[in-house]
Amino acid sequence: MSRIGAPDGALCGSVARMDDLAPDSPQTGLHLTDRPAWGYLLRDFLEMYRIIPAGGSAKIRAHQRLVREKITGVLRANPPLRVTDAATKPVTGHLQRALDQGRGTPMSRVIRSIDGLAGQLSWQYGYDKVPRGLDQKYAYAELLGPTGPVQSDQIILGLVLFAPGCIYPTHAHDGITESYICLSGAMSQNDQGVYVPGSMIFNLPGQMHRITVADLEPSLLAYAWIGPPEKLLSQKMVFSRKPRKTL
Ligand SMILES: [Fe+2]
Image 1 (tube, protein in one colour):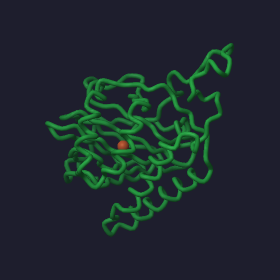
Image 2 (cartoon, rainbow, N blue to C red):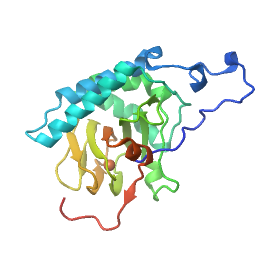
Image 3 (cartoon, rainbow, N blue to C red):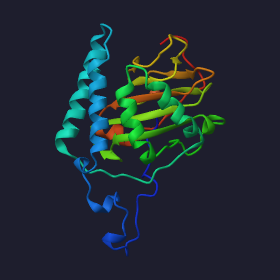
Image 4 (tube, rainbow, N blue to C red):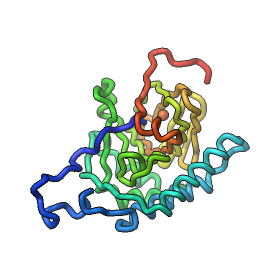
């Protein structure tokens, strides 16, 4: 998914006194351990990247190990927590259904953690101009990354929510290795296979990919991006009107 700019609603007026600030304002100097629910969510991501099989792929196994190492480093560092104002998008009307559908799956643990933070997530488009129709059917919420909420320049973790029938256009990520984990619903990438909760998709840097979602149920995915700090900070979505036939 795309990088976002400065989080919305994160600034308070310079004349505000400390006790006027929202309790989770960035100016209050919060760190990860001050809000245990965020730490539990990161631990559940860590566990997800431990239990999901690598399918015999050395590259996927190495990616999963790297994601675990980065998350472990974040947990040890207890970084600043920049909890921004919650933001919704039209697609978040499907979030409760997606969470409910994910409860009876192997992903139930992380689903519970997400549900506990659902009221705090800041759902974004990540584009100056959202492709037509996508504004109703897609949004993502970053959990960990250079702009937070949990701050790290080593890895980005987030969630992406698709409405039923969403077609997410062909895109690639410059210098970023990406994995998607299906948490709820059913989706496909490049018309190659169908992914259900507990399945992982792995995209090497620059690999073009297009996502389609089942007609009647939403799909919630977790994603992890690994790459050099400068790439994580400046990542932009790259669209293509020429989908590759083979990947
Ligand atoms: Fe992607």
